[in-house]
Image (tube, rainbow, N blue to C red):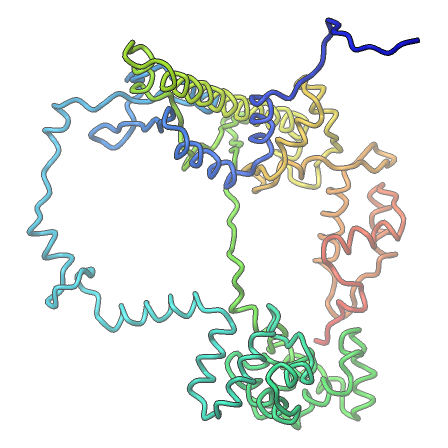
Amino acid sequence: MGLEAKLVQKMGQSLLMTPQLQQAIKLLQLGRLEYKEAIERELLENPALEEARDEVQANGLPSPESEPLEPTILATPNSPAAADDISEANNDVQPKADWDDFSDSFTDYQGSASAKGSSEHEDRQYSEVASNAAQTLEQHLMNQVRLHDFSEHDRVIAQHITGNLDRDGYLECSHEEIALASECDVEDVFMVADTLRFFEPVGTCTRSLQECLVTQLESRGLGDSLESRVIKNHLDKLEKRKYDQIAKAEGVALEEIGRAIRSIRTLDPKPGRAYSEEATRYVVPDVYVQKIGNDYVITLNEEGLPRLKISPYYSNLMKDPAHAGVSKTYLTERLRAASWLIKSIQQRQQTIYRVTESIMKFQRPFLEKGIEHLRPLVLKDVADDIEMHESTVSRITTEKYVHTPQGIFELKFFFTSGIKTSSGDISSSSVKEKIKTIIAAEPSSNPISDQQIVDLLKAEKIDIARRTVAKYRESLGISSSSQRKKIL
């Protein structure tokens, strides 16, 4: 049987990942910050896109009755239309700025642009604080090294030490490695490191928690105190709250150990964290759920997000017969890409709205009474309710936050497994909240054990194993009963 190549036509159906679908899926899973950056990037790259800015009336509010300049698909299903230009009459009514008054209010006698009434000392103090806040731990320590009477050789060693600190301020390598890198004796490294550990913040450039805490005590003049002996000799017992054993070993009363421990708690086990380069990220809700009367109203948060429209300038260029060939092809591609993006944004916002609406419908008892009344919920429940795929619901609930009367939560928070009880299924998040409440009410001198928590939950008809209580407690970041024990 001979082999030969043939051209055969065949009709069939297959699912293809078109560029539009890929873009829509990508936008679905972006958090608010990444979503905003993606829109701003498209605004820079695509000239056919424009930001639809709402014009304001004389009172500073958008005009609700004005019509948009250009038919535009906006980013939410319930967004107000873009306002028209302000009339010339309104512009004439607004007062003109008095530049002489402005100059008198914001220029000091030296000619520098500063607020009237603020002193030069305050400005300099503010700039110093801002400068310190921007410093890294290494820079802060090296500034002190330059002011110290170190030799040039010792400064090289100090630079190697400060350059090998972790985010907590601890030395990540051995003194021998520092000596090898700086081509010096180990004794010289020990001497420089012993000096650096007393630099601000005190306790950095040390190699262990014990050395860090002892250094801070020595800087306070407590090098030979009970606190220092507890850290040097009984750190393992201190971590396990075995205070009676520490008191017996040191031959002092339990009250004295309690006083020493309260003093130890004022020490900083991670002195380098004050100069951490990690930026704080604040959560901005994507959706607001507010109670109005007996109903809950869902509103998408569009504050700070660009609202897009097709540029009328480039739309008109397409109609100009003078532009043909390559330029017209380019404009067509840009306009099509702009249209795809606007439709993808609209679909994303509509999906967030529908998913949030479905979740709040299932979790209405939570909205009314709090976390303890959170019901078990899985992705399939919401997907079936809004007739979407589970993967779509999973993407849209990732890094999206909702502001509710009970607080701000990630949308994924509302999807929890269920625990069967005699009175019906209960959410695992509700059980965790009950455990947290029970532990918060315990006496500090006699913490409640996991088995006692099991018994208390059983009294509320919640039957779970002790190991489940331990797992939930650890997930909440709560220590065991022996570690929670405190001396009054």
